[in-house]
Amino acid sequence: MKFNTQLIHGGNNEDPTTGAVSTPIYRSSTFHQHVLGGEPKWEYSRTGNPTRASLEKLIAELEHGTAGFAFASGSAAIHATFSLFSQGDHFVVGSDVYGGTFRLINKVLKRFGLEFTVVDMQDLEAVENAIQDNTVAVYFETPTNPLLQIADIKAIASIAKKHGIKTIVDNTFATPYNQQPLSLGADIVVHSATKYLGGHSDVVAGLAVTNDDEVAEQLAFLQNSIGSTLGPDDSWLLQRGIKTLGARMRVHQENANEVINFLQHDDHIGKIYYPGLADFPGHEVAAKQMRNFGAMISFELKDGLDAKKFVESLQLIDLAESLGGIESLIEVPAVMTHGSIPREIRLANGIKDELIRLSVGIEDSEDIIADLQQALKKLD
Ligand SMILES: Cc1ncc(COP(=O)(O)O)c(C=O)c1O
Ligand SMILES: N[C@@H](CCSC[C@H](N)C(=O)O)C(=O)O
Image 1: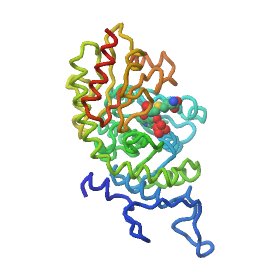
Image 2: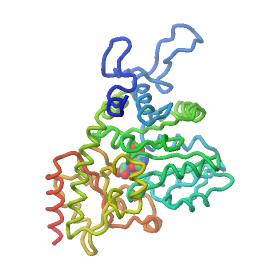
Image 3: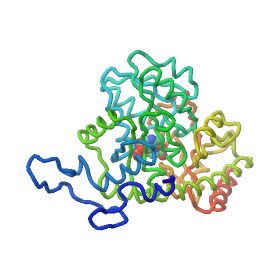
Image 4: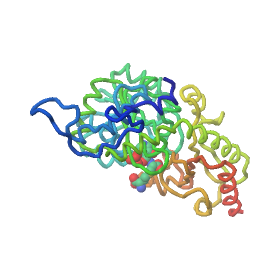
């Protein structure tokens, strides 16, 4: 089955009892057991729920994994994934990651004895040099939030394999439509499904997928033990959103291409961060490992122009955290999504105070561009 067909027909798509083509919402916390001490397929909804199971099967198929797990948020999926490891274990982590992941690592996981070395994942030599005797995994995003940096998944996974450690990729920005890290050698993929997978800014959810049976068994144990599972209503909503991922991504991409073209020719715009640009550092790797470059764009205004005034002048594009929804969203990472990273670390990693991040939606591109244009004019 090809990808777009799989989006629609994957998972447990037809209900075995009624034939319903939309997976029913099994809103039941517990399930009747016919015999005492048997091995019922369903026993308790934290352990397993048929609606959630359909979503988990679907994301495993889309990411070319063997097992998928749904969580109450992307952060919960990432937390459960790090919980596979133990006190004293060391990780090589990408220097540009979502601010909440930085916070989870530094303010939570370190307290439980996990150790981290932060590395620019674009530098393969630095990645290998950061691996220590107690290193258990490399963890990174590609493209990264918010600088859109590209890491070579195949090359990093092969370094990791050489050292007998795992590769974990946050595939939120690319989605399985544009990139499938497990097929490039990664062991675990995590998602903030709140973003493109859900696609409508109406659900907070997280997913983890693996093709390693041992990891899958442990993740199932951790998902049930920690308990940060996705409820049946949100599981249904997320699976409904995923069905249109391909159609949405095609329009997101068309619009992003138009917006990039506009930004490149506007006098107010300084540096643009977008892997689709031929002179962007990660362009060649992105072209190799991604179907297309996605619809997340970061940029700076020319020196002296007021980023606050610009984002507050937009009338159509929402000034809001999050990304990947059908509506265009804009934000200033230093103040919003990456505000939990101390300023000096943020600046050292390349996130300037005035950096602007735009999630290009699927409205008519003319309207998105007209809104950018009118807000930029207010800066004159
Ligand atoms: C790349 C990335 N990973 C993980 C997360 C965490 O996801 P959630 O907000 O669903 O917890 C986010 C955003 O929140 C993100 O942008
Ligand atoms: N205020 C939130 C930040 C949410 S950011 C959401 C998303 N990852 C994005 O990058 O837009 C928090 O402190 O967690």
